Image 1 (cartoon, rainbow, N blue to C red):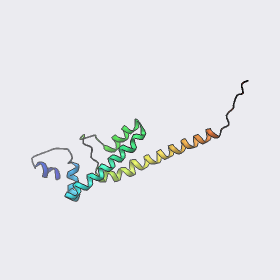
Image 2 (image 1 turned 30 degrees about the vertical axis):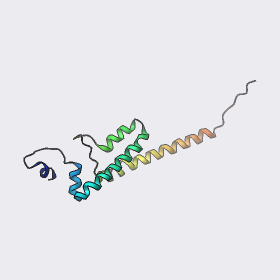
Image 3 (image 1 turned 180 degrees about the vertical axis):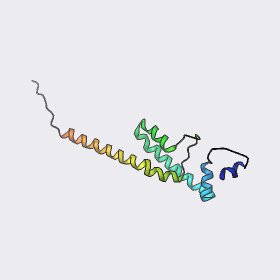
Length: 120
């Protein structure tokens, strides 16, 4: 519906409408200002925290930003809500489990007595 309003009724394209069009459809002109701001903050936080994962951050970025299909990453606020529970929360749980196992591993190896050799 939004696509036809923008491009006319003689176009037959299978692509989705833009994120700005979706924001306008949801909240009008105020949505064009507020919703991209929320999406931008989410993208910035993802980039900031994903850089800790090294090469795996590339896979995480592809998962979150979904640049496939129309080669237009669309991060709508509704997508952010779904991604928080489907991607971000499980990732935080796995990261915390990893940190706890590293901590326990250092405690175990630190408490193990080491043999010292006496030369002389």
